[in-house]
Length: 398
Image 1: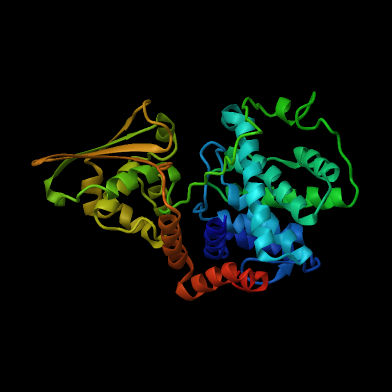
Image 2 (image 1 turned 135 degrees about the vertical axis):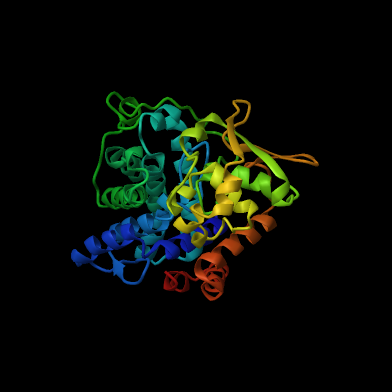
């Protein structure tokens, strides 16, 4: 969770000037609320408003961590709520991270409970399950009793919302901020004595019955379901297993490549398989073009790689047109197989994003990503604040 905290704050700093962040900031500032918590991009606002802005800003680039069983982004909904309430309570940074850990675990369990049908019906689980996780984190920092925590979770059943129809627009990162704000609101209202129906989650007309939920989860699972996958490429996560597999192959001379085949789970063909992207944003959702870009030496971890000009580059187009993408139902959603055919033979590699990655390797990759997003000096300040358990130093970089 310490690594995810650094990853999350770097994504938020990088996204704080995105249009969605500017719009949400304008609303929050217009309300002239009490400055309880720090905002990405300077300033302070009520805890609920800070959670809203910080969630939206940190998801603006869609570069934050994910969980495939949850079908959502855990940290981007939970950490803004934990940080806002932590500042409100005068907590230590370690207490914020502790609450975020428990909140992320909760959001994942709720996400699994809501299930695939909930997601397929059109609900964005970063926003729905994320609101429950944000509530758990907030109630933990507020020190609420079991009874009051139950009321907070019951209240957030009425608030938890967010639609996949917003994908591809500023509405998607707004969903993440909304989840964080909803969690803060439910927890603070429960602290103030607001009560709610005890069966609002699983009773008649409750959340599970009305939101196409078909999942199950072993609530005694030991020890954790928290197996977050961090993004190391600034594009759709459906492309990451392919890029990792590609990176493990010896790079043949480009003129020797006759054909490239990508095998992936069928789900991704409707998500990130734009055959001929024309814009930098579309490049983030194109197997063919991203493979060509990587083979041409472009750094897929850098935000400035994804430009309109690259999509129209003659060398990229020529290599892109040698790439064929195939659905393979034997692969799970975290896997990909890459095959490169040359005059000298066939090179093949497989990668699963759930393959074990040591703590040292993960930290090194996240450290590189954080430095690339925010610069070395700010990155050092982030890591130092986490190591020193210093919340004021941590929020100072926002």
